[in-house]
Length: 484
Image 1: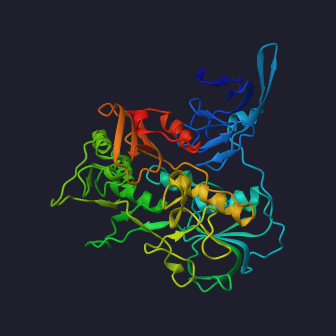
Image 2: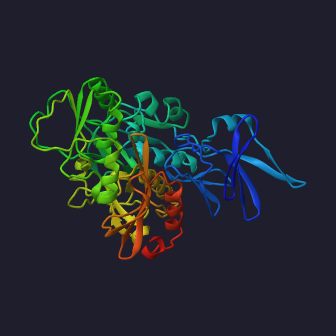
């Protein structure tokens, strides 16, 4: 039995559950986060919900509904009663075993043939923003046509796991799921232009589709690099399951070179250490993650494995992965559309994900949006979790149920068997307060700006990041003096 505050993990014979007590009332729900199936007895309880200590997803303790992301499913809840000072839980056996629950969804009632060039809602992109938008529409009772189009050859998949899993393991929803809930997906369909006056998009193959509402969630693409050998067959950007499979195959017992010390570059390096004969990492900076996590934390993380950071040296490469971490928004097709973009190609949106064009919404990596945590400063946060939030807010806006972006940015990365968790928005931090032991890789780092804590990162210090995220989410300020 695991006890943490007012949360207890209990064995019900055919499965386990979380027993929660808040304000004198008992609640019972699943004990595994449906995001990655991790056990969450050490979750953080606050104001009617629990927050997963691993990746920050939040679930309502009364309904089990997911309230903050990442993840698509909710938790099952169980009946609780108290008799003669005994707490009795009545649970469904199947729910105990599956430990997840999909919200009820409506069906499409519009009689429209699949070849018809009109959709009530057209979603461009099949990442988390697009997928959550489509699912939220159905969950909220939307009964008109939804079409999602993507350049990908696969159904929506878990991109953060690209360096660690196969295409089959990455799939977020099955084709049966989309068919059951009347969400149409057009694969390998590239949009080349948008006409906001006629509300029409044109595909590269010449097909046109009219829409009533448009959600743009095309994500980002690697920033082009100028180098010799870019057309060589063993040089990759990790973007698709095919890239991941090719990298793993070519690196087997061979020499792998990773160009770039970004999170994705270092994750790939970590994933290949057990497969490749050698793994070399080339970076411009002497310390990885310095801009995001600071020099002290970056130096500590270099101890995970011996990493080669050299310049002017020729390295043998049977496979080369470009992982510099620099990307640009995939918005070139909007240049003549009238949808406003800034000088970098990002689409500015308001707190309901609305662009400057009525009926056109955008979310995910392609937008700058007002972050409540930083006094509604317009920011771009290309995190998996944030894209989920944008998709939900956009769907509610499409249905006339406008809802603000109420979330705390939450990021994670795993390499060499260790996980880093991060919450907040630390851009422009001017100091880092370290608690714990960097040498032992058991620490929490508080990032401060003008005497205020703006972000937190940790390793082997759970659930501190989720705790701080709850404080940020409540609107309270953490001062530098409070953590020193």
